[in-house]
Amino acid sequence: MNFVDIITEKRYGRKLSDEQIAFWIKGVTEGSIPDYQVSALLMAIVLNGMDEREMTTLTMEMAASGKQNDLSYIDGIAVDKHSTGGVGDKVTPLLLPLCASYGVKSVKLSGRGLGFTGGTIDKFESIQGFDVYPDVDSYPQRIADVGMVISGQTPDLAPADKVLYALRDVTGTVDSIPLIASSIMSKKIAGGAGAIVLDVTCGSGAFMQTYDWAEELARAMIRIGKLAGRPTVALVTDMDQPLGYTCGNILEMQEVYETFRGQGSSDVIEVVCNLAAEMVTLAGMNNGLEGDDLLLDCARRLTDGRALEQYRKLLLSQGGCLKENGAPLYVDVPHEALRVTAARDGYISSIKTDTIGQASVMLGAGRKTKTDSIDYGAGICFYKKVGDRVKRGDVICSLCHGSRSQISEDTLFDVMEMVSGAYSYSDKEPRKHKAVLGIYRSDDI
Image (cartoon, rainbow, N blue to C red; front, side, top):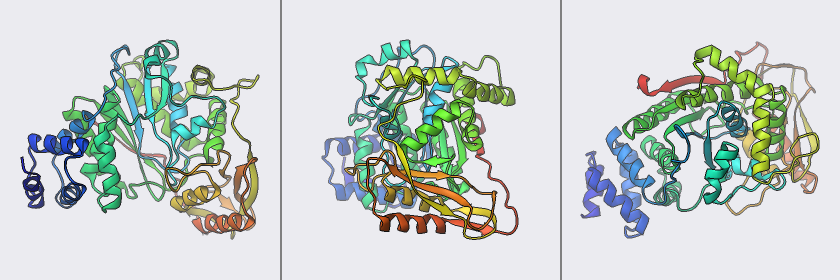
């Protein structure tokens, strides 16, 4: 098979056969196709797209390019969750224990943060002693004992996707629904998922900045899941302001603990409970509850101690340290370094969430490159959000760094100016943001 012919086929908008896609991904995995030829095909896909069958074949070939997790030791359906990321996304540490309280068992493979999108693995690693790379052979026993495993992704999971992702990043071929959808779904399928729940964030702090684009991605992934035999549900959620009260690793994990204790942010609770309702339903563990009744039950379990008990079990099972009162022990203590105040009287009308994310990276909470170290105590606490009325001089948020870290005054003031400029005000009360903007299921597509 001549790879130039494959490039030409897609250049002229024709559909690639399953055999052509398999040949491409095999060549990518083995390194037998030059980067410049792979990049040419990626650009042709950006320009001319792929249909459902092509996307699904690409997904399954990438999933099969490396090791695939066998989760047959899990009774019933192994349901996995994925988020396209954002600022203040502390959903997974709340979601897994909540679902475990229903008997849903899950192996969650997550990544580290890069740029302003926080990484779930970094968040768990901010707890003293927590092992983010437990031995794969121990998974069955951990599932039997606790019902959950959280782990970093291994290099042998969908290796073809890693090659393509790196090339897309440097060739202007990131913005393609077929390539984004197949990348996400290949990792979920390789991870052993029998059913998948997706959190597709949209807004200024998300990769998908408009609802239409987020909806298109959600529908594409559901179609892939349908053809691949994996029931898939996608929620489109708001990322036009940070999620919850905090962004930053320890700060977010502190908020997680407070949410379990009944002091959480309403937007976080809304997202977590809606995702949990879909996961327990796909797993057949919803105990006959549906709709609002199931959402109310999820909200009760999240804050009445049942989910917190599961959370503590998860932390202890992977070496995490708890204080005598049952609260997690963190690797550092966040220190409030500077407060940001409202520039004028009025209502907060919008927040440039990407700017907030970039500011948190400047504080040390995120990475600019994969090799950067992070300050686990760094981040931002939000006291006022969209729709809140403020007076000039009111504290709207505070900037933090770890007590063991140093940050220059110049950097702090630069960050303060960035964060202050991210807030907009109006004299008229704006419409409150909904956290869950839409839900799409296989039957709807």
